[in-house]
Image 1 (cartoon, helix red, strand yellow):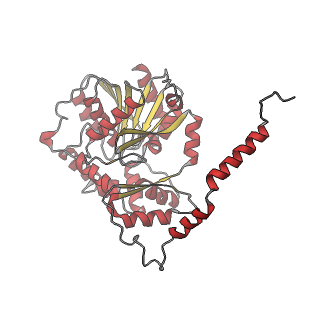
Image 2 (cartoon, helix red, strand yellow):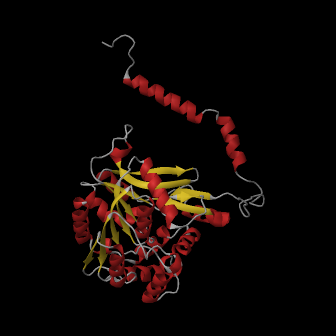
Image 3 (cartoon, one colour):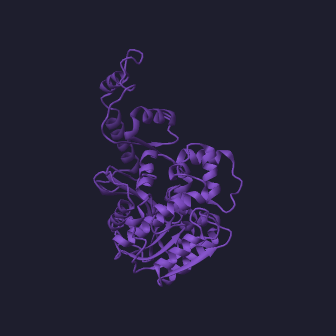
Length: 384
């Protein structure tokens, strides 16, 4: 017998469906009129889409499998809107599934009005009660070629059981954007620090690759109270003009945008070949998809590269001062920042720094030799 005042689940469900249908599909006549007015008449001659004029920065965020307005529409819209517009496609349900399996989730963090940074974070850290993990927190900072998840996937899968792993996308990579005009490593470091504080993490270790290593060094310099230790791979402290010129000469390029922001699929092949000790065979569609996915926001990324190189006389590399323990973990066949650069960096950093070379690995050491890399990485982090 049903207790007085109680409603059956079936009746409750029916009421919910009725409420939803009334809410979503009420005012049918007026909505039909809206749709009729929605389509511009006159065989496109009245449309403003041909010459849109917007002074604002515009961020287009789309699903890559949208069946109504597909990628062709989005790409055309970005082209029409011009240089103030950027587009990003949300994809990779497999990646989201993998991250969910290791207890991580995607989180957009508003650093300040106009600046948003995307992080992969431990799921438990965004609980309503903001219960932080007891595991040691580690911040992984990616390089210039890919976003955080593509750079550090093997490390996330290996370390997430023992560490509270945080993987951001730097500004103009992935889903991270800003309206601020600065393009230096300092603004990247500032946003990382503010993002981690908003996530409730005040102390952590930093693992940085290439460009991410330079951002990591700047982060430790600007916020020494937050960075406990550093693992730096395939990187330098600072990109001085002399280091930049020597490195570009080694790889046969005259500027960084031509190398790091290829405009063709063949350019992607050259980039990955130089970045590897021995590039494995990969199907043609991989290079094509990689080129489409990883090289958006070209204008802003060119500006990042221009701001990266500093005059030798303005460099801080000549007198670095870091209180943290530093572990340099590199491939022995890095063609971009070879062992000469790494040995010089260790000498400059002093007694708090140790170095380890991984055999038969290039600039992308964490992808080429993930098991060996993860072994040394865990060993250092657990000893910190």
